[in-house]
Length: 295
Image (cartoon, rainbow, N blue to C red):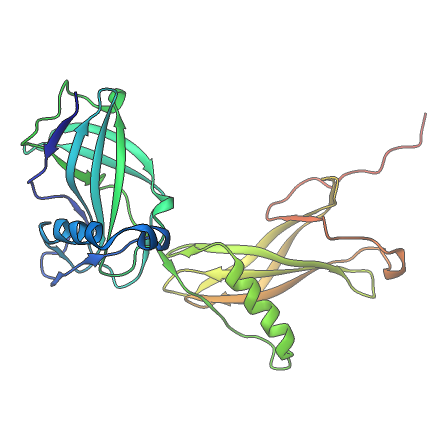
């Protein structure tokens, strides 16, 4: 039998700050949902959002609206509301059902990546199903339950980074290539530092040049003293592995920087060595040895 369990309790939030102002939130749908959902359905969702307890600036809130006992699972409908000034993306997030005594009734980790980026002041609807093995009571009380985040989790906020210290002589065409590469990279979250391989090529002197793009998602500059780099051929063999020392090298706050690393080799351009399928790993590994000709 399907049972509907109303939730009229206040809901947990992350990053609570009682001194900040309340933030009104509005319905935010993924583009596909927005296109297929009728105005009547949207009006119902907007009415549900109006009934939710208020949130404040700097809060990420999940508010349960109702739950159904489906026998093997508990289906919960909720809204995730963003009180930050930047859009927020979620990944694997633990959610808790608890009662007014703060007792945990259910706990399960959900992958919420498909919710996409939730804009500032956005309220995005979501449905999750708690498996019965993750429910710690025989029955969720209809009039005494709330949905909340595990308060130990932190929200991942996507940040935008721009290039710094580009060569003054860079051609416009080359800059557009680097700009498109930056836009095509996976999102960088606040506090993250990433290094991505842009290209691998050979100079006339035989040196293999690895060009990388470093992104700093921190609100302060990051200084780097050394970077380990391993170069592998198309068969996975380690060709070169080196610890590069850097002097006075920094990547600014919320900035991206291009840098070249050179591996001296005996390769010549006329040898026509294809490097399209070569890989770069940011660690140190033992270089593959040539097979011995000895019997």
